[in-house]
Amino acid sequence: MTDFATVLASHRVLVCVGSGGVGKTTTSASLAVWGALHGRRTAVVTIDPAKRLADCLGLTLSLSEATPISAEVFARAGLAPTGTLTALMVDQQSAWDATVAKYAPTSEIRDRILANRFYQGLSQTFAGSHEYMALATLATLVDSNAYDLIVLDTPPVQQALDFLEAPARLQRFLDSKLSRWFMQPVAKRSWAAFSFANQTTAMLLRKIEEATGISTLGEVAEFFTAMRGMFEDFEVRFSRVSALLASEDTAFLLVTSPEEEVLHEANAFRAGLARMKITPKGVVVNRVHKPWQMGSGQTLDPKQMTTQLRQRFPQARASDIRWMVKNFLAYQELAKSEARHLQDFYRDLPSAIPLVSIPLVHQSLADMQGLATLHRYFVAEQRQETSG
Ligand SMILES: Nc1ncnc2c1ncn2[C@@H]1O[C@H](COP(=O)(O)OP(=O)(O)OP(=O)(O)O)[C@@H](O)[C@H]1O
Ligand SMILES: [Mg+2]
Image 1 (tube, rainbow, N blue to C red):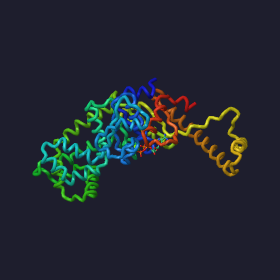
Image 2 (image 1 turned 45 degrees about the horizontal axis):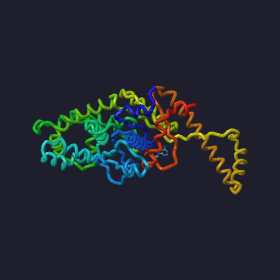
Image 3 (image 1 turned 135 degrees about the vertical axis):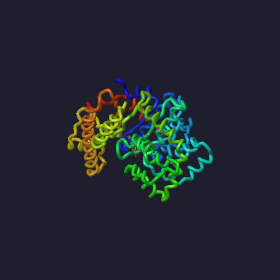
Image 4 (image 1 turned 90 degrees about the vertical axis):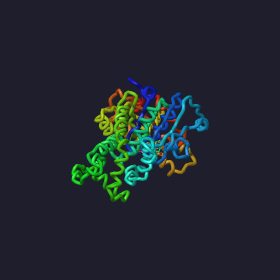
């Protein structure tokens, strides 16, 4: 069976997916630092709205440009990378603008698109354009051949597969009869053709209208006319990204925490990925409460614990001792219940998928040193240990 470290070492693209708040950004940043320390030219891409990745890497600047993490940042954390690390944050507005600038045939057309209110509305409010741009950025990075390892962090999503399906939704919208209608020469357009518009696109247009105050369809039509060339390329780029995600070079890593409902969400996520013919190549269970291993002769008997604590801390107040005992018992109970839920989760997880578990740690994970402390958990297969 492949272990987790081998999965990291043998893939060019790692995509961290999972429910909100489980530790995707932390894991992505830590994996990226791991890549740089293992001699790989690494890029980490986030579309995290909270700019947490920048914080993690000790950067205060905005990351809309590819930002190399300097050797000094590593050195301050006592690390000496043999590879490199570059961080990118996909800020959707600048990503769209960059795409327009790249593909517009003339500067006049570029300016026309950028000044178009429909474009501004679409690029700012269309749910999915963010994700689309992240995946397009991924494709560009892969094509550039400048990186041996690209780690893609994904945003908090309501629905498990929003992230992956959003670009397809955008593609469907661009392919829809509605957008084709807009792309026709003005004389041919007729309002009757609107009956083609399905509910989703109609709703989308309404939303954009609400957000931007656009009331004339002229702007919309002008936008589509100006963008026609770009859309053709979008299609090519989108199928390239889809192929990349399904390829042998890419590993999806499912990140979860050990709470029962989050594990259910992780299973739903896995089922959703399976529908897209994607199997996660690794699972990270994060923020696990590891049970305190009792020494020989120690039991969970509250009376005995109280006596032992009194002997150990003779100055402590009785109420403090009671509080410590209560807390410790609650912690052990929590750890036990997590272990039970994890056992159920492992049972359903194909044994070929390597799994690591990362405990809830107390040191800060908001800097490079903290991120590097998680590396030890990437090298040990933890399924046996935790489920035993
Ligand atoms: N193993 C850990 N131990 C302690 N704290 C952790 C651990 N992993 C992550 N955290 C903390 O949990 C919080 C959420 O982590 P993170 O931002 O990485 O989650 P996320 O999945 O990216 O969230 P979102 O879905 O909102 O983007 C952060 O404050 C992070 O520092
Ligand atoms: Mg995040």
